[in-house]
Length: 329
Figure: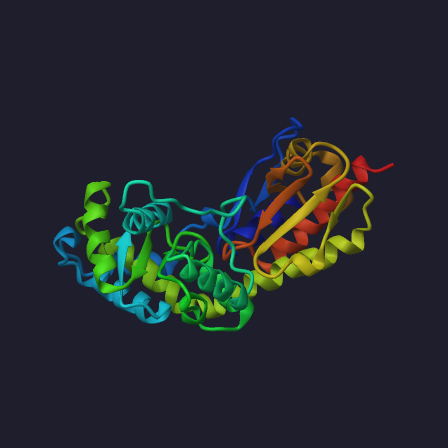
């Protein structure tokens, strides 16, 4: 039976199999990695794009593929220009350094500091408040495209009330590396200087930019599927009716699901979801390792992405059901 499962998974893109851990059974287990959407691996289209990319020295502004990406990103975001950088962290840092150049400048951040886009009106209100105090607004676009898809608006609609923006390519868009920072022409000129100072000036970066172009080309098809799979999990989780864990279905708007844990510590729950036992195979007919992330003292985070299929989602639900039955009264 397990050999048959392995053959079926081998035909499915993104399937990952390992030896089961935590039980000593050594069975072959299917791995579903929901720790983050940063764990995606480049698919065939991205790998072809990397191999075929026309490149030049981007530190001199001579890489045509990087220039193409920057122009497309600027149009998508509704900004004058964008600049390709290695990471979204660098994009945000460059933006802060551009905006806060005077000694004594202050930056206001949300309490949990992973900036989320809840709704267009909220961004507009923040912008109006900032303008009244002569402040500037930067949007951390780590998952900006997920927000745009969920809100059914163009990304530029979300960005229009901001003075600068970052856009990450290595999360939901599936590229292995890279981000852009966007804003007015003079802002990007200063960002170019800061990128160099921070060690972010790259050479033949077109091989990386090419993967980002692939991610931008198919996000309207891929991201809704990720959101649907996350919502399917949330609905299925509610049907488990567990007194130990729960999910707020109304809070599942994109590709993230927060599972509230009222029983064992989240770390213990994560260990059980990763382990595989002979009992699991006997009861469910599957050997599955689910990787999730302890988020708070009472919650676990699961993130859907292009390497997790609808079938994987059903396997994850079965795994959760098995673990919760083992923990239940």
